[in-house]
Length: 255
Image (tube, rainbow, N blue to C red; front, side, top):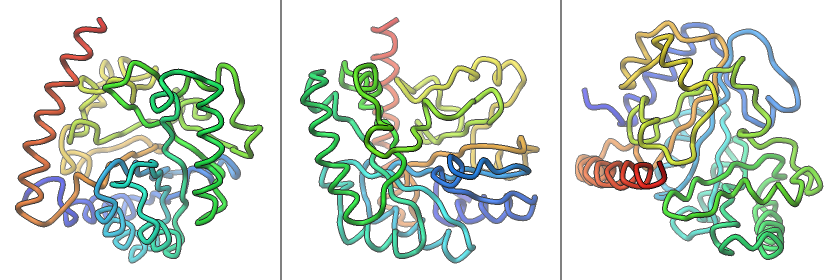
């Protein structure tokens, strides 16, 4: 069976449910501080917003709520899709990249942030945000918070600031695999090297299904990568390999 299909994604969710995991949105995690076995399920909607709706429908069928973070770009910012995902009971958040858009001008960036936060709040009472990595930009979106505070904007959580990853395992499909940290420019957490030493490295979705995973996790996907349509699957496979090569080059240049 091919990986990164909707069928494989459903199997992953069903496997986690069968192992006793509950699923929480990031907003609920920030507000409720759950215990026991749980997964914070996060989706970064970078492109192909229609794929996100497909994923959201699968989750709703399984009684799962997740967090969906939308960018301002047209390929992500689809009002019809956002409304439909919110109607399924999922959390909506802002996938911000204001520093990249304003070329590092923090004052312009906060104005841009406030404008688009108000926009997304038309669809959902947004309480959490998540930085978009913008790997080709020299500007890190998180630097905005060196001058301003997102809490002043009614935001209760940003994963890269409000999760203690020494107590919570992080999985992301960056690079179209689950061990794509070598391709990641900014989607990194401090514990990654320690997890590698511990052998907590998984490549495929099927590896995750068969693994004995930690009790508490955040799992991030990019729904654009997940499809059952053969032509789109092949296209994403090729394009992601190209992107991975470019990211590796960017990381090499920075180092």
